[in-house]
Length: 175
Image (tube, rainbow, N blue to C red; front, side, top):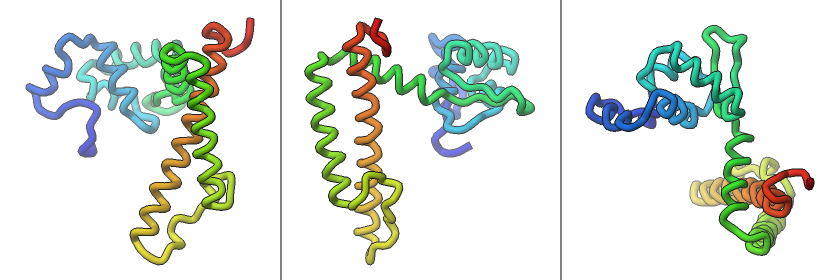
């Protein structure tokens, strides 16, 4: 396991992590922390529960749309559903901001996106070669800028989705 484990290492830390958290909550926390398909047996180990309990809760989360399952693998593997998490983020934005505030934020983000497009001469951050620079500082600056540009694009998607939700009384499609 890496230094960024989904659950604390020591017994005292682990019991504090579990204090007040039921098995479902621990499995949920673990699956949100994984970034690639992970065997339910590994998730069970991290969540400190039986493999059967982990699989039961992961299947429930799959039915809810929070998780994607690859049941063809042995053992079955699960990963978080990024689309669900994006929808959840957009829903929070729609609840917290007015349509006007969302539109203002979208305008700011579109301006920033245009600045990146002008700076790099392309509409796609994946077209930018960050390693063609002459020194380490320039490479680092370009990597940071491209990463921030991708964040702007992601935020634009979220805020557009939030605008749709806020403008349609919580629905994506007008009633």
